[in-house]
Every structure is written in C-alpha cells, then in structure tokens.
Image (cartoon, rainbow, N blue to C red; front, side):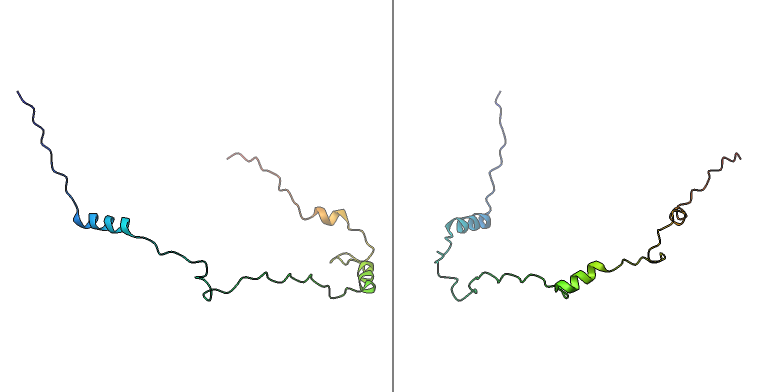
Length: 100
C-alpha cells in the first residue's frame, strides 16, 4: 500500500513579483545639505513679549485703589451682614411619612 498526497503547485502572481522586484531595486535620490536653500525661510528667534502694563500704574492711583471701600449689593456701608438673611436661602422641607 502506498500513500499518495495531492499537492497543488504554488501559484505565482506575475504582477506582484514585478512590483516587489521594482520596489527592491528602487534607490532614493541623495539629499544634499543645501537642497532647502530658497525653498524655506530661515528660522530666527521670535522677539520676547513685552510685560503687561497697568492703566493706572502710578503709586498715587494704586494707593487710591487700596483705600476704596468695597460695596456689596444689599448691604449699607459699615453695616454687618445679618445671619437671618443668610439662612433664609436654604430651606429644608420636612419629610412627610404618610401611609397610603
């Protein structure tokens, strides 16, 4: 008794073989150091930004600003805020335990 195996011959793709052969044969052109001259602008460091300036930078104006009284809406000058008005905004509804 003999064993026989059926084998299929490998199919060759001619276009694929030609493409791979051309890819392997390709040599990239050499790049010279001065190829970019005239194509791009030379790089230069940008100027440093200027520090911001205040509109009222004089010492007299700054001391006047420091001496101003802070105005808060709803509170007269010199009046302390009442704790009653602060507590009014938070209201807790009682829970109803009604059985149906």
